[in-house]
Image (cartoon, rainbow, N blue to C red; front, side):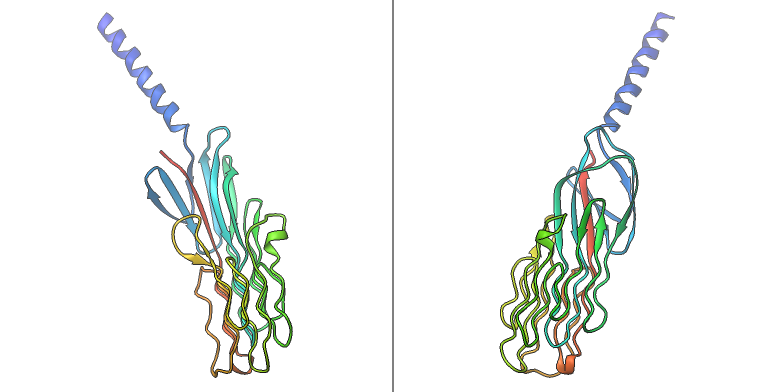
Length: 243
């Protein structure tokens, strides 16, 4: 009998330890997941829900949010604003994730992407301010609004108009537009890729502008007769220690 009692006590201690270990880590669902080392990443390419079923006291996650890119017209569209938090406080519950659409037609800004308190502004269309500013047509490039927003982040101005038929490129999250060249984007703080590149302005060429790639937040390029490309949709990535 004493042997049985000792076995039961040991078993109870084992279960208690296992439960305690599990409670030290975030457990969550939503989006497309991947793991690398001790980290798990949830990637949202469309709007959805991030559900946390376990979170220890003081839990934090890394979060990257990119807004939808602005559409091109004659000038290039600005990239979506880019926001990154290295330690966003999280707790148990279900949370909406909004992935902003790119501007779909000339003159249309991109839409905001949102997670928790982080808002990445949509990119500006031609002559329009946005997360990254749109390129200038017959004027200077528009302002990038993301850095001065409540969420902070990255977003530069669009490039200036140079001459007739040479309109400005959109701003990017890594640099301002320069003349007709769109600004550089920013390398991902979570995972791989470059995001929020400004669209090039039309520069004496012909044809429709190139659209921004989906889930990059890139701005659309300018095109002949104002037939610019659509902006690319945004993206949200969330990463945390899971084991």
